[in-house]
Length: 54
Image (cartoon, rainbow, N blue to C red; front, side, top):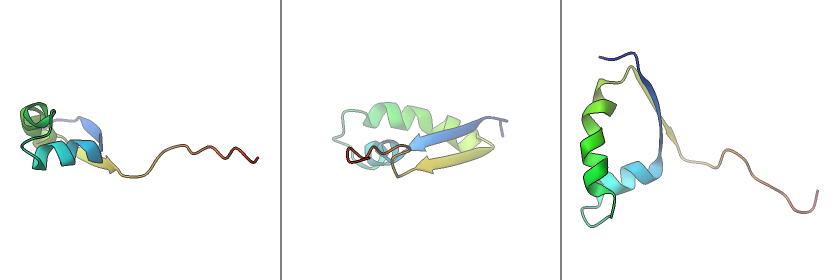
């Protein structure tokens, strides 16, 4: 296990599961690094939103 902490976007999971995704090979290549990480967080919501009415 590495001391690395990772923040992944759900796009990574989509690419990993979809063999036709243009980033599928890169996601598969990254998988061992993710498995070795001490922590893995998945971002599924936008960090910042803007409201044009405020």
